[in-house]
Length: 394
Figure 1 (cartoon, rainbow, N blue to C red):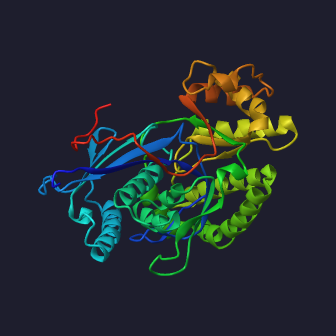
Figure 2: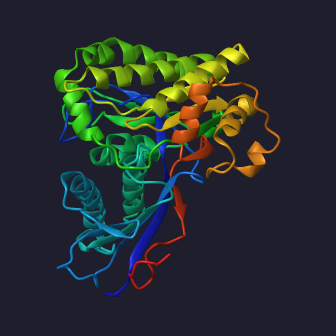
Figure 3: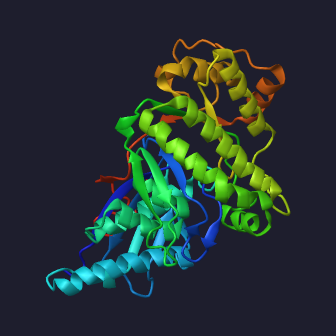
């Protein structure tokens, strides 16, 4: 049937790194200067839903196209094209080996994608987006590729996207081959290994960041002397401690490395010339709040981390919800969006925060996201492209 529309849909998660990726040794292939490690977050709270479709009936003059959150998105860039090219080549190889297969690799791709969180606001939207794009097209093409193999492709779209092809706790091994064939993600532990890891995200700004990650990290590589120390010594040590902490389900070293690595990353940004500042006064107030919560508890119950943006991600274990979430809830108030009623019911403010810290947080946090560790991409029958090939209006 020449007019048949083939389609496949997947959801993909956000991941938040606890050992950060920052710096490329090959910008074209998106090869990193260091390994990194992240926690995959639950898709009920943060996810990209993507439908990939193709059909011989799609007009060839239109070519491939992508709708993101209802708006046309450019697919002519090198990153998206690299993903399309790799996936099409794999499908074409299957078709060459089996003449009975439909020639999907020759058909235009129509892709519709939506996030349930702000795009390009320091919430790893590109990671979830490219992971969903690659996984959906791989499913459309019925490719027999493992998540690690697909991570090689997703990495070329967005470096951290390779980690969103797995759930749980995920490492991106930097590799050392010039062609990048060993720079891929693998799962350190699945979500069920340490299921009580929670995260409270303080959304400080949903605006697009001033300096993109891509240009920021290249400035750092070129100009920061601290950066060389970070990739040579700091990150390898942090990776070793973090992997052991996850295997042992030991929150104290997990938390210390998470906070130290975030500090190290932002120090190299500040050491970049001219300096890059992703955090602001509200971000720094969140750090002070975590320090005060930990001091009051007499042990480490919360760990902050910041990606290339001002939003605070605070990791904690479920048993410490009252100490962590209770404190922030009573400072921020119940009127801001994102609190889960069941989770905050009856929580007491166990820590009294410094007045200046509390005021900065109250004035600067626009919403919260309560989430935790979760699974990798999930196949779904919730399609954003109808059977006739038209985008579904939602």
